[in-house]
Length: 196
Image (tube, rainbow, N blue to C red; front, side, top):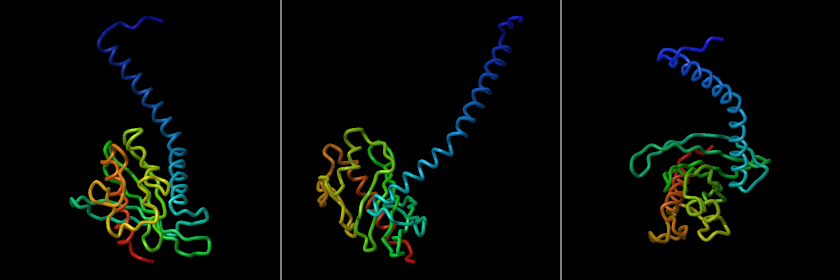
């Protein structure tokens, strides 16, 4: 086989051919993995709903989106999963809420009973500092120092540094404020959702 002449035209053709082939391979891999990734996200959400509602035997009776403006006027979208037990009794709802934390978005799933008391929560996504802000997944749980379980955000939950009743994560006040804002916003969305 004859060696290609080293010219700008030949280099561009070879580089373009390699880029097209690599693009096709990446598209194929993306297509093959998108289904399993989506299935994993759905399973994580279903498990999260059961965890925050503190009930393994439940069904999501209704999923709805509620749009509200935050204190700065920015429109936010909340996803509310109305839940029922096996006998059809209302359990309350799990609400997805996202706010800006220290390192990026902080996405929380909060479970509320029918009166609006917090049953549980889980962090769905975060970009907080490992070892500090990442502690939010345990800090505000029933056994954590900043326990919010059983409380009602009727009066917004705030950190004690701001005159509130919840202990902030040590050295991570910004994350604590963002987390409590997400919980308070989730409560407002839940209360604003139309009843069945």
